[in-house]
Length: 228
Image (cartoon, rainbow, N blue to C red; front, top):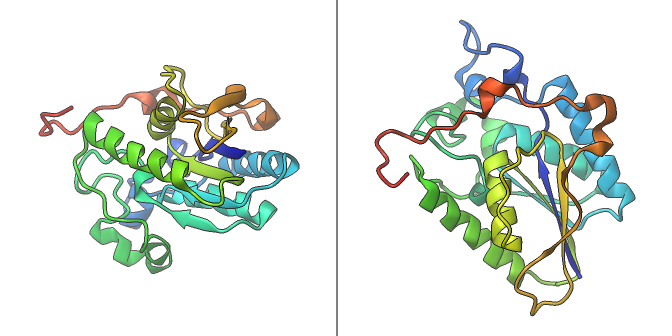
C-alpha cells in the first residue's frame, strides 16, 4: 500500500509582521519563514505523522515555509527531504515569491537546499500549474518501492490541484495552515488514491488553530499571462 500525506506549511511570519520595511533583506521579504505559531502547527503535524507510523521520505516545495515545516517533520521521523519545484507555490512574476530570483544569492544556505529542485517558469497560468502537478502525480505512481509512506509539504493552491489529480475530486475548501490529508493506493495498478479520514484535517492543531488572514486568500495571476 502506498500512503501519501499532503500537508500545508505552517503559518508564515509575513502574515502578521509587515516585512517590507527598510533594513529587511529582500530574500526575507520574498520568502519568509514560519511564525512561532506556524512552527507549533508543524510540530503538531509531525507528531501526528510519527504516531501514525512515521514516513519514508518527504517531498517539499522549495519555499522556506515548506522547508521549515518539512524539517520539523523530518526531525520527528528521520526521513530525508527532497525539494521539488513542481510542488512549489504559484509564481505571479519573475520576482515575486521566486526562490530562484537574484535574492537567492543573499541566502546561500537555502539556495544550496534548492539546487536540485528544478527551475520554474514564470509567470504561470492554470495550465502550467496543472502540467507540473500532473508530472508529480505520474512520478508518485511509478515510485519504487511501492509500499512507502510519503509526505508532501506544499501550498494551498498546489495541494488542491494535487488532491484533484490524485483522487479525481475537485475541492473548493481552503486548506488550513498545518492541516493534512491522508491518501492511500492499495495496488500499483490503481489509477487513483482514496481519501482516508477527513479532507485537510486540522483537529490535531488544538490551540494552534490559527487560520489564514482573509486578505491573503485573494489570488490573481500575472496580468501579462493570457493563458490564465
